[in-house]
Every structure is written in C-alpha cells, then in structure tokens.
Amino acid sequence: MLRRGGEGFQFFLFRVLPAFLAAGLFVAACTVPADGMQIESGLLDYQADIIEISEGVTVYWEDYQVDSLRGEIDRENEIATFFTDVLLTFSEGTSAGQELTVYLQEERFVFTDDVLLEYRSDPEAELLELKADRLEMFGETGNFEARGSVDIDYRGRKISADEGDYEEEDEIFYMRHNVRLEEEDGDWITADRAQVHLGEEDIFRAEGNVEIELGL
Picture 1 (cartoon, one colour):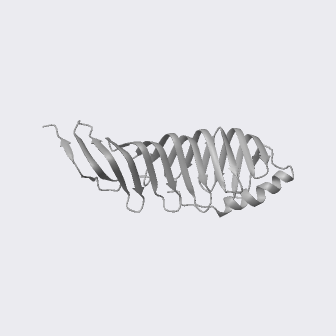
Picture 2 (tube, rainbow, N blue to C red):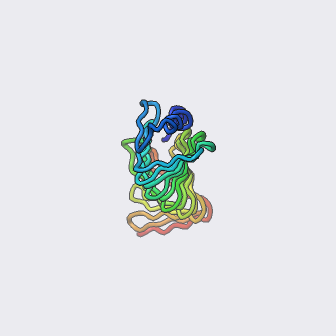
Picture 3 (cartoon, one colour):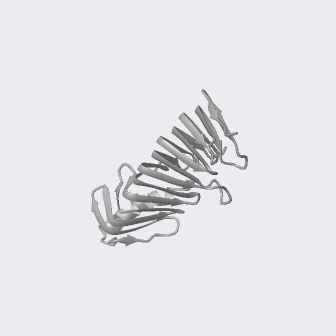
C-alpha cells in the first residue's frame, strides 16, 4: 500500500513548477510526463515558497489521486496540505477526511477530522472500513496508524478501540485500549488489546482483562 516513488513528483514540484510559474505558463492546470505530476485547479496563487490552489483541486502522481476543495504547497519544507472534503485514492482503496497533510520526503500522509478509510489488502480480500479521529499512512512500508475513536467494520464484525496500528507485511491490525468486538449474532468480546488478521485466516486474538458473552 502506498509504496510509490516520489522523486518525479518532488522534482516537478520544486524545480519545474516554479519555472512554469515564473514564465506565466501555469494558469489553472498543468500536465507533465508520466513520471511527474499533474495538478488541476480552478485558481492558483503563487507567493514566494507557498503555492495556494483552490476552487476545486485534483492532483495526480504515480497512481495516487488527491481531490479536495483547496490546498497549499510549502516548497521550502516540502509539505502539501489539502482542505475540505479531501479524498485520497490509491491501489488498495480510498481515504477521506477534512484535512490531509502530505510530508513529501517521508511519503507520509496524515488525515484528520472525520476520517474514513476503505481498504482491501488485495483485490480478492474483504473490504475493511475504518473510522477514526486521525489516520497516518506510511508510503514506504504500507503501514498505517489510527488514533481516537477507532471503529472498524470487517467481515460482518464491528470492532472499536482507542487506537490501532496496521502492519501490511503481516496483514495484522493491532488494537489497544478499550477494545470491543461485536459479532453479527450479538456475541461480544472486550479486552485491553487485540489482533485482527486480514489475511486468509479468520483470526481474532484478545489479550488482557478479556470478557466474553456468547448466546446459547
């Protein structure tokens, strides 16, 4: 997940785009070669090292796509921020929220405010839906971290916790603090910690102060 080279994107953003702007060649949309980046927006305002884009924004690079109402690119610190109805589309799914900050050198994506992730570990896998206050995604590893009121809907189960970390290599979601799992039939489990396996094996492991209620 999200493991994509960002060198073409960064080269365009910090070397090519300023030259276009200085020459007056960038008005509302710009197209560059396939290994670069394309930005589409209704309005662009370029001041020193800050590029503001608004009135509807779509950004493409590699196989990522970001849609939002407006955004800001800080060239000096290599940070891009998108605001209001933000949607990130990538090969394993989509992530949405009201604000997205992209740390370009680190390939790190931070969503805040009303976050919803729809994710499949592979095209044949079950869909995982996750809601949280904050979601941080790491491009190089494909891992992600969810914080604050984490709610997961997966294989008919509803799982909640205060925080959780997903390790893509093992396809395991590690959840912590006030974990609760509820099955479709009403059975439930509570625990301090839990592991949710997203691979072929349907495994849920609970640890620490485990309580369970089963219908008989």
